[in-house]
Structure formats: C-alpha cells, structure tokens
Length: 417
Image 1 (cartoon, rainbow, N blue to C red):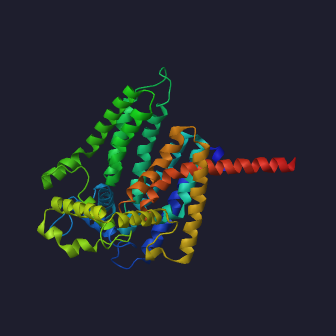
Image 2 (image 1 turned 60 degrees about the horizontal axis):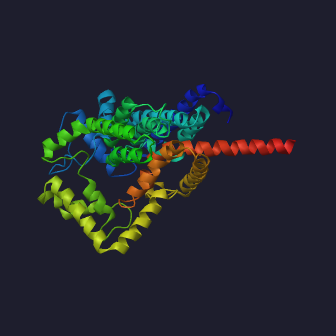
Image 3 (image 1 turned 120 degrees about the vertical axis):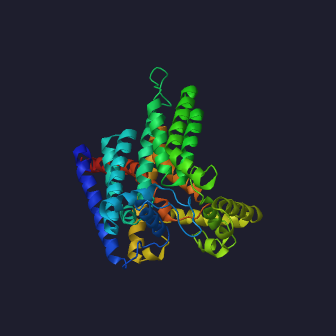
C-alpha cells in the first residue's frame, strides 16, 4: 500500500496497465489462425467488417439484404481510425484498444479520487490495471473495453452532480455545464452500447426524487437530456434517413430479446435463428426488429415460469466467476478468474458497507453492475457483459482493501505492544 501515498505513482500504474494489455494483445494475435479476427467468433467479425467499410467510405451495413442499424457505430469508428493509421493490422488494433483500456484505468483513478481520495483512486486504478479478465478481454475486438472507458468517463460528472444533491441551499450550485457534459458523455457511451441510454432519464428521475433541491435537479436533468440528445442526434438523423423511422440506438434489440426469450433459449446466445428464419429477407430491418420483439414478449407472456427460470440462469451466467465460452474453459483460467472474482467482489461488498452513509460514494461505482444485472435478466447473460462495470467497481474494492490493510496494521501494532 505504500504506493498509494504518492499520486505520482499513477504513471507507473498506467504504464503497467498498458504493458499488461500489450502482452495480452501479442498473445491473442499469436494464437489466432491466419484470417481469424477473434477468439470469440461472431460479434468481432461484424465490428471488423463495419470498420473496414467505414475506412473505405462504404455503407455502414452488414449482410444481404443490408442491415444498416444492427450495430452501434462507436467501436467500428475506433477500429476504422486504426485502419486509417496502420492499415488492416489486427495487432495494431489490439494495441490501440490497449491504449483505450489504459485510459479507462486512469478514469477509474479520477472517479475514485472524486468519490473518496487520491489513495483510493490509486488503489482502484491498480486493481483495474492488473485484473486478469479486464486485461484479457481488452485484447479482443469487442466493445467491452471502449464501452468501459466511456461508461467510466460518464460517471465522473454524474458523481459531481450527485454530490450536490445533499448540499445545503447556500452551497448548492447549478452546475449546468457539468450536466450538459454528463449528457454528452452518456450519449458517447450509448454510441458504443445502446443499453446506456437509459442512464440519462434514470439519473434525472433519481435527482428529482433524492435531491434536496428538486427544482435545480429538474433543470439539471433537462440539460443532461439535451446533451444526450445532441450526442445521439447525428446517428439518429442518419438512421431516419436509411430506415424512415426514429431510431436513436439500433434495430438489434428485437433479435437480442428473442435470443433470451424463445422456446429453445437456455440463457446463452444462439443467434442462428436469424438466418434460419429468413425474416430479414421478407421484412424491412425495422419490421424484423419489431417482429422479434413481439415474439419474445409473447413467449414470456405464455410461458411465465420458463421465462422466470431463464432469468435465474442468465443472472448466474452474468455473475459466474469464470466465463462459459469454450475458448476460456481451461481449469487454470477458470481458477484464476474465480480467485479474481473473490478478491474483487468481497472487498467491494465491504466497500459498499463502509461508505453506506455517502450516497454518491457507494451508488455511483455500484450502479452499473446492478443495472446490467437487471438488463440481463431479460437478455442473454455472460461474464463479458459484466466486465465494463468492473472498472468502476474497482473503486469499492479499493475501499474494502484499504480498510482491511488498515485493520491488519492496527492488529499488528496491538500485537507488538
């Protein structure tokens, strides 16, 4: 814990974060076969294809007939930027993501310092820097790492706003610029993963309910929503242009929902039905999305017991310490990830308890993982969907670890006396 006494050690922590992620990038690239994009087939190939099309000025679309609004543009845009800089070099893309993951660790420090203090921020950044699942998944061409960076960035202004909810009237500040900034960052995160869009109206609602200054919280919420709308406006306008409908996020919610709620669902993802059903060959992308939404709702309505059991299975898959994918099924990998889970979650629970009297301090880093748990009671569950929320959760783990260290030091002194 000595390193936590000097904020200059942040540079060493971030250097270690990048080094670990760079090694993971090299290792992943080495084990892949020629032409293979990722260890986990499916999403990564789609992101890579969209990135290639963006870099070449082609339509942002996949498949035939084309689907224009299947994926959010955040990760493909980043990968396209990498292609423009380095060509179609997968190792360079993984190293670019290593930079993104390192920035995410730095943002964990900023959020930890904002909610607690510099030592807590440093310990939290160190935990995020060395976490095996965060390091390992960073090397995959998936949206988790970029989303984690954007998610954590959006939590910082939200924390500033929450800290004013309980302030005295004489010290409460409008902070409308902060609210606008928060909305823009929430929108940026939504452009990576669409589920984050609900954080904007959710935060507005909580501010009105929990703040001592409801009028001020209402105005802040309006400004925040304006920032969110501004961030999503270009994407929304583009989607209206290509579909003729108001679509602020994507048209993949329907198939994703049906993936988790259908007669053959088992809690994991089996998207083969999309090609097997041939719905996209007979319907527009918008109508296909609505078709699968309706089918999922009908299944849940007609099979409430089965839907409830699937929610339990999905929740287990979400919180499961080790990944379910066969690519990561080695016993040693499962043991390391399970140990990491224990060393992260138990101190985090202690951190929640120790900071229970400070609303922003415990709720801001805890809210993402709780929110995603609820989301994936409906959609399919997987460890990978939990990972972005583990970056801010490291702050609560740091609080728990620092308390355990201080207690151990106290016991040691008492024993010496």
